[in-house]
Image: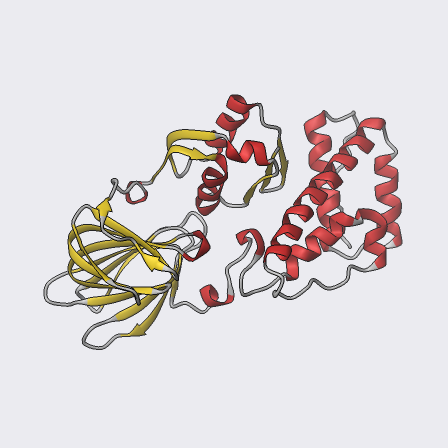
Length: 325
């Protein structure tokens, strides 16, 4: 490594500054190629005071916690590629922390751990939005699409009846005039002749289709369900809802996120759709706590602060990574 990740101030820095410095060291050693000079520099930095050493220990502990989270992912999806071995010189400094980063780096392009980067199918999509980004555009003149954050659309056919696939995320599709279209998503497809639908890919292979105006049909291998304005249906590989249910008002089109007595595990998943970086819950009991709130997509750090105040959660930050415990 040729860069100096830490600036040591002439006066003793406060604890927050020490944490930032320690986190910078850990990130550099986890992702770079430390030399003997780097080793000497970090040893010198750690020896400056007991607080410097404590900050280093805490930063390494955070990386280890992230590694345990990544390991749980690889155990859940054992067929994904195993990470490459970590070099011995890196183990000298970070041990399991470097291994944790290695697990995150190479666990797979097919289904990335923790959603830290887009999957291969998302990269190959024709239209894609990044974290926190929303886009609107027209296809074939009469078809209008609005893409929410972390959304990928692949065009399958632009003939008389346009067909495209929702690879990931959430999109609103409007059909105007006499132009019909099909939306493929997971194990089903949506036929829209006139009106608007919102389609979202949910965790565990589920898909939710919400009709906001006009009418549509949801086709699943097991059956077909007709939707009118204000109705929604959910399906997965195993089947589809027996009947359409009333659909709540959509929030994302207005730049808002709403939580209605939801477990914090679900709240954090939703935050991670809109907020750059990553929020990780490391406590099962905390994950089961519930929260109701309505907040702008640009103010999601307020939700993190609210969780900290409401439940006494410990919040640790490593760059854009936020760990709740």
